[in-house]
Image (cartoon, rainbow, N blue to C red; front, side, top):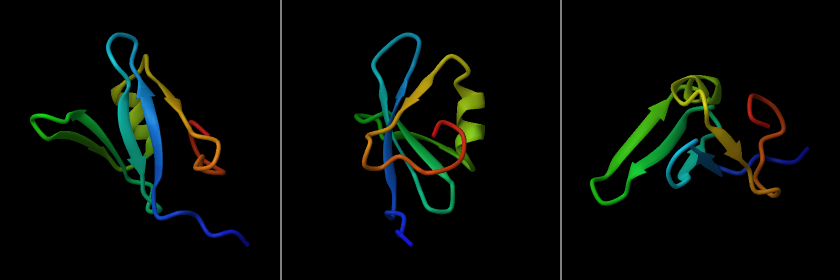
Length: 73
């Protein structure tokens, strides 16, 4: 059995603007950095909840860190 990494990074590509860096934790919680300068972060209890907040966005996973299950996988 392969252990999941502590956190899996992703990019949230919005319809307009630059992609946002994000991470999903083993608990399923997600964080997305909205504004590095101001320290603004959006948190969601799951990827599903995160994608509801950004209906026109798509998630890009690096091949090595993509979760094996769940939305956006």
